[in-house]
Length: 261
Ligand code: MG
Ligand code: MG
Image (cartoon, rainbow, N blue to C red; front, side, top):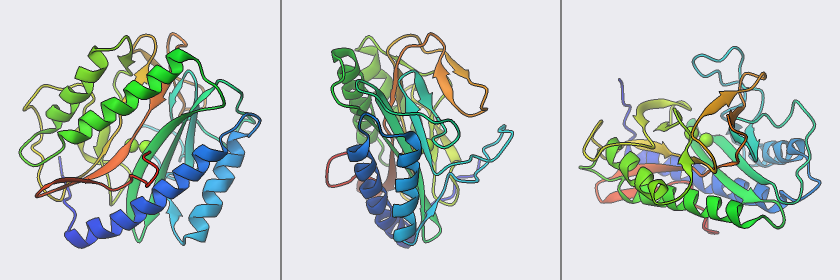
């Protein structure tokens, strides 16, 4: 395992990138209405990234084990889709009551931030509202313990504690990760962990923390496109993610916007 720590200057650059990142996600969340296509979200993201002079980090990225490079800037995952839904290959329109996860990787001045938000399309039912709330809470609690002296296991423990108190489950095998020079770096940041277990957190680490919660069981399944992960039982899933820098004093949420997403 090689953990590449970021300098103070690099974290400052990532903070500026993260601010832009939050702006884009906020705009995409606001246009995710009934009748809007996932392709329209992708095109808006590309236009905003270009206007900012930045680059989409997921487009062309080939994760280990994937058979082809990822073909879009965004992952747009609707309802039973957990993560890595492709927005520009099959025509899909958002409809009233859907929940949609929008995940973006942004490269600003050579450094990458990774953040996702799940939003409801129009009026969503009580279970969906609760799912979004608990997933966001799990992320917040995970971030709270992301500080020097703690470990990646403490993050997983905090997340799993929140989920354990709900009727939802954590999508199996999926986890957070280091981020910055590339989309996925060490360390592995589990969503289920033991206190004090695993890599110790030190200033300069930059982590993408990302709980993914299902309304049904934890089992996941890869679809034919080679990227989209869905719940095996067809239940719905939500995903919130922030890029967080560990500092001497605690942490900085690099991708938090002014609108609280
Ligand atoms: Mg992401
Ligand atoms: Mg990520």
